[in-house]
Length: 191
Image (cartoon, rainbow, N blue to C red; front, side, top):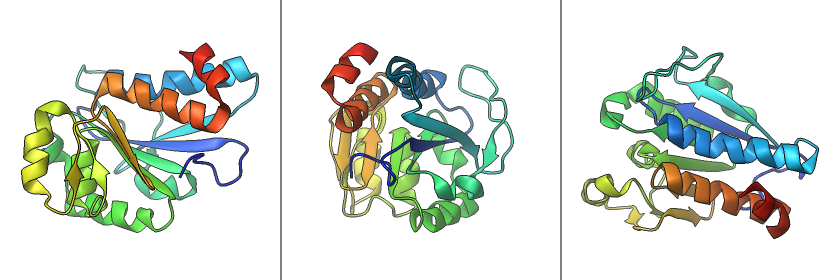
């Protein structure tokens, strides 16, 4: 599963932002990637932001995203992470779930950050996997999805599924992924 890139050059990560996503969670995913590129002196990572319809998304803290792509354009990413937080159940729709299932056939790795794991599980994309979610939602997650093995770890990597329980755990996850792809020395410099 790791490294995420199929071309061993630049890993392309996608982040599907749902309304009221955590700005801190997204920053803790992107800033380590940016720092890695800066320290390495070359682009080891690139990223794209997506929304279900390509429209700007407002975070839980009221920050509105800038240019963003529609989810159906995410076919070329090495990994796609669903980023949600508050009111995550209201963000789930049949078209969103259908799009995620369709994309799962093309995207090698799927992930859920914060409550993004719930969205993936609702699509059936975590069935048979170990996964985690924000600690406040773990009991609900466990009750709702009997085909998912919930774990209370900070982040979980199970084959081609990656889940993290919140903003600070996303930082831990990204540092782990950086180490797996680029070594401990670079991870330490980024940290």
